[in-house]
Structure formats: C-alpha cells, structure tokens
Length: 199
Image 1 (tube, rainbow, N blue to C red):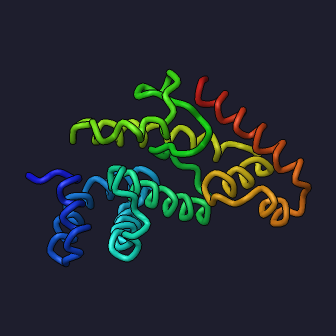
Image 2: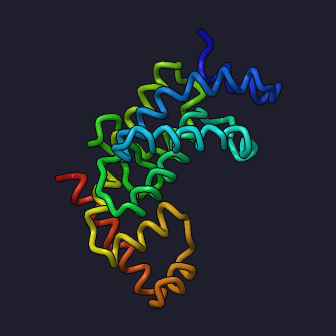
C-alpha cells in the first residue's frame, strides 16, 4: 500500500482526479475520527473533514512538500473545529498542538520544540510520521483545553494571536486596548497555559 508521502508526490506531480481520490480516501478516515474527537458530533466531523480535504485540492499551492501532508491538513481541520466550537461555546478536549509557544516531547513532558522536529521529517519512516501526528494531536488537545479554560480577557486575545495569527496591533485595535496590554495578556496567558499543561 502506498504511503502518504508517495500518494502526495503523485498528486502534486499529476494533479489528476484519480491521484487526488487515492490520497483523499487514505486520509479521510483518520481525519474524520480526529475531528470527531474535537467537536463531539459525527455529522459535523464528517462535514469538517470533507471541507478540509477539499482544500487539499483548492489550496494545494499553500502546502509545503517538505512536511507530511497530514500535518498541514490536521492544522486546517483543527482551526475549522475551533471555529465550530467557538460558535457553539463548547469546551472540548482537542487533540493537537502547533505554535502555541509550548515546548513538548513525544510524551508531553520534555523540551522538544515542534518546529525543530519538522527538520527531521525527511529521515522519518511512515510509522514515525503516524506516531508524530498522534503525539501532536494529543498535545494539541491539552493546550486548547487550557486556552478554553482561561478568562475571556486572555482566551480571546490568545485565540486571535495563536490561532488566527493576528498581529499585535491588529489585536489591540480589535479589542480597543493598548498594545502593551495585548503583550501583557499574551505573556500571562501563555504562562497560564504552560502551568495547566504541567499540572
């Protein structure tokens, strides 16, 4: 059976419907299961997974082939799920971490930065990729759960900065607060997240 890497390379080379379908149906079961863990609703999970995989076709130019395609897609699915959860005002146990400023290892306790780990992907086996994805998903959940438990003054600003990738001045304008207040709340919010995850 072809690996994620092989199927991705084939699709990037041909951009054909058939190669897209092979990749789509290989990724969809795991992605749907992952999203269902986030949103706790199988119908919504199915919709989010399909929307995410559709972006694999429409936004493939944004994908960096240096990394595993599932890492890119799971990040998209995570953000889609977060948007749904925010609208529903639900707290949910989520399963992935990326760019939260939290350093984690495979077991969630030591200091291996996720971004640094990306540099090692080319030497990893298919099973290594799967194990890495699972580890990231598990820690994502703990981090997002920590964010969801923060007071509004921290949660909303951290969501804008860490999830929506807004600039500090944009956040200040949006919330009608000073730039220094934004910096202070982000710094404090990150500290609270780290404390929660270490507890």
